[in-house]
Figure (cartoon, rainbow, N blue to C red):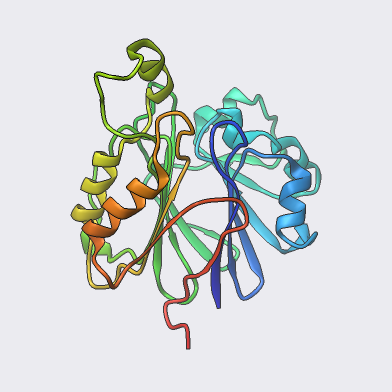
Length: 245
C-alpha cells in the first residue's frame, strides 16, 4: 500500500509531505516544526529512509538540523547544501541533476526548475509498486514534459490565480514571484496527462492570492472524472497505490 500525506503546506506554516510505501517513509521537504513531522509519522523517525529538499527557503527546510541530528539523510542540489554550509560527513548531500538515485526502496531523479534565481529541484519518484510520482513546487514553469514516463500522481504547487488588474500590483508581484499560477499548472497537467494519471494534489496555495476551491474545480476540468484532484491541507492522506485492491 502506498499513501501520500500532507504534514503541512504553505509559505506561512511551511511545507512537508510524506510518502509511505508499506511502512517505509520518504519525506518531501521539511519546512514545518520537527514536532509536527514526528506526530504526522506516528513518532517513528527510524522508518524514514531519506528526505528530499527542493531548495534553501526555510518554509521547505526549517528543521534540517533535527533531521541530520537523528541520522536522516537529506538529498538536494549542490547549491542548497553549500548554502547551509554542511561539512563532510554530515547528512545533507548534493546529488546530480538527471541521474537516478536509490533511497531505500524508492528511486528518485532530480531536475532543476526555475524559482526566481534560487537553485531549486523538482523530483520524479519511482515507488516500489512501479508507479511514478512528480513532486514540483516553487517553480515558474516546468522546462520539460514527461508524458512518455506515464506519471500517475502529481503533488504540484498551484500558488496563485493569474494576473488581475484589481489586485495591489506591488504586493501581488512580490508575493507570487517564482511561483506557479493556475494556468501554468493547467498546462503541466495537460502536457503530461496519460491514462495512468490517477491523482493530483495541489499544494503551497497562497492564502492571499489563491482560491483553493476554484483551483481544484478548474484542474478537475483538465483531468476529467477518472482523476482524483485534492487541495493539500494538513492531515490530508490519500491512498495512491497503483493497484489499491
